[in-house]
Amino acid sequence: MIKPAELDLLVVGSGVAGLSAAVRAADGHGLRVGVLTKGALEQATTRWAQGGVAAVLGGDPDSTDLHLADTLAAGDGLCDVDAVRVLVEEGPGRVQDLIALGAAFDRDEQGRFELAREGGHSLARVVHAGGSATGAEIERALVAAVRRAAVVIHEHAFALDLLMEDGVCVGVRAATDDGVINEVRARHVLLASGGAGQLFAVTTNPLESTGDGIAMALRAGAAVADIEFVQFHPTALHSPRMPQPLLSEALRGHGALLRDTTGERFVDELLPRDQVSRAMTRRMLELDVDHCWLDATGLAEFPQRFPNIAVALAEAGLDPSIDWLPIAPAAHYLCGGIVTDLDGASTIPGLWAAGEAACSGVHGANRLASNSLLEGMVFGARVVEDVERGTETASPTGAMRSATGTEQTGIIGGCPVEGWARPAELTFDTDESTLSDIAAARDALQRAMTIGAGVLRNEASLAATAEVVQRAGSVAAAGTGPAAWELANLVAVGSALLAAASARTESRGAHTRDDHPGTDPDFVCRLVLR
Image 1: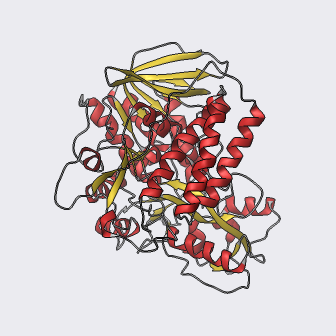
Image 2 (image 1 turned 90 degrees about the horizontal axis):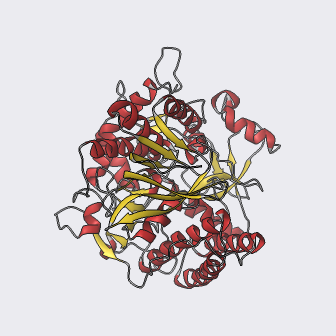
Image 3 (image 1 turned 60 degrees about the vertical axis):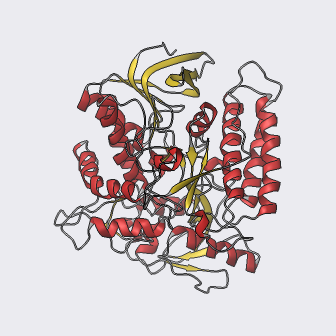
């Protein structure tokens, strides 16, 4: 049972952003810190990350300027340059912090980091662990550090809504697995709850990725932006298993080839993910098939380089040395989220966000591969520094300038999304919807989002999807308990995504409108939902 406690910082979520912040706040600053997560501490999306961490660690021809340029190119005109500069310049230090906590990255016989090149990167700069088990190694090191630190840990606790007093966030309302609802109060709350991959029927995200933190922020009135940009990973293993096993981008970096079902190559394998996913989807539609092939037969020492992937393929009955691997795009990463300044502060005093739940301005319209773990580490740390300074409200920096209407030359402006209704708070005293009703509504929502708001979208598909999402909302509102709460959160985030995707009548980055195939200079702005 959770007992209300006054904390300096409550972290909601147990991925790289949240745990990095918790360790730094407790050990480095002596703050009273709590971590609240709806699963076990180790059960976060971070552990599924394969590729690695993109950072310029020195001793090679790379530079932070090159890393910045690659990130801006992938973001297709919507990255905040100041936020990206923070990412690439502070990132190497945060990687060293992880190593000090015990994270072991792959090195060669001379002790140098083994660096991989991934799509959109001009040079090899991605450090990895266990070949393709980087997320698991980072999560292991952070969980061990948090358990050593003076951190109050609330596992299997579902954060329901933010506690608001006089417009200030003072904690969260949470339910434990025994059904008891409590208040967890804190001077500062950090939402590091991850993304919303479960909006889609095919995803690399675990079942817990239901957009809970973003939905809570939307209900409380926080600004959210860039939520229409959902990155689909082009090389998820096409199989009944869910979440879809991910075939790391590093495979293509090492020479694996993309082929259609006729065996023809049809796209540059090292293009950014959005371009590869679009090319695959269009080729699949042309050929009326549900997958393409990844040809990794030319890769030497596959089991040694990619042991986790080798195990997953063996479980699927596939041998990468002789078999082409069936693949299809899968929902992978939400590029937008809760709008923050350069220190993670949101538009609500007392509320911070970091990691996939946040819109820091780093990713713009499309995330550069392996920048996500780095973003969580960098901006989670900056939140703690801001809290320690006693900051209460956001500054007009980074993506926050889009939400506050700050006019400065060279920044990305903000455009409000009209006709979008703020979702209602969760209910706790109704139970008309059965678990089978809720499961059916969630399945229908996921299928509709995949077909109508996935890699390819248009006005008619978005409108049809909105009707399905609205019906799912009625089912969620009539139920209670974790399944209904998760469905309500998916509805809240899905409705926001559809509103922004409908308003952005252009194609840019990870957002592709078949009925508006070109970019529009009028949309060099963030679409902000308040």
